[in-house]
Image (cartoon, rainbow, N blue to C red; front, side):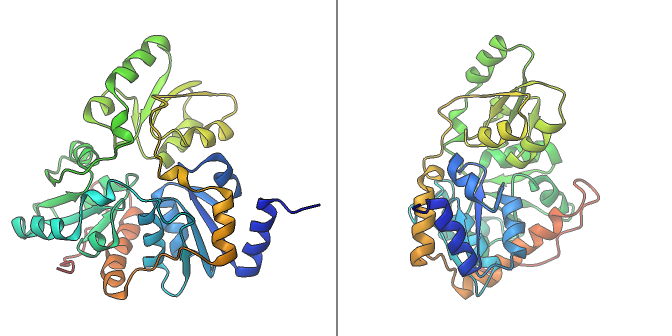
Length: 320
């Protein structure tokens, strides 16, 4: 019998000592074949501790770059080299240097949805799961610049009470989720609980019962007594929500919340990447070293309790 794509991938993973990481927004068939599925923070931690020689990252470019930054000497593959994040392209290194010149005393907190060049110019990275803890870890009184997502930054400022200097970036997928979508679904399903991603606009997050990362949504869905949940994030998460909670119903806030870049990767592309060891993502050493320092500070802070008890960010100045 002819081997399936999944069989061939499994054989190549054994032969190459490879691991497949997939983001929660990937298509169902890619999530099914992955060794680890998670949000950006979970996958960053997996990338930091993997013993694999080859990492196949099913996500977008900044995620593969993060794996490369944390794993010098390992081969990191992005099955589709065109899978990129529009938000990450909204802030380049030149723009960040301009902002740093305007605010020279500010600590730069950089969302992981950013390029390696931007991470290298930042003091510390964060994800949507630990952004509040990272901001709280900056010493009191020090100005904080939060880039590139203005919606996540605004939400974190509300949660922490820390004034943040924001830029103009945003997630094109999450801004498609509109207040009228939530209002209409709440009218139809008055008993439903609403959980949304903090990359959504202020009007949407203020209508939600729970605002959290995709990993937080998965945990909350298992813990809540609600049997019906409206989900305000990229629609790929609903596959895993339904798998993990067969007795509950999940309704997308809008079916328009699709990230086309996340959907570019297929099982066939994973197979082709492994067969030819193609589409390597490698970060030059002069960027990798300062970017890794910012990521490692994130991983350390992210392990601390959220809030006032979080460890203070060291007094460091990121590369200029």
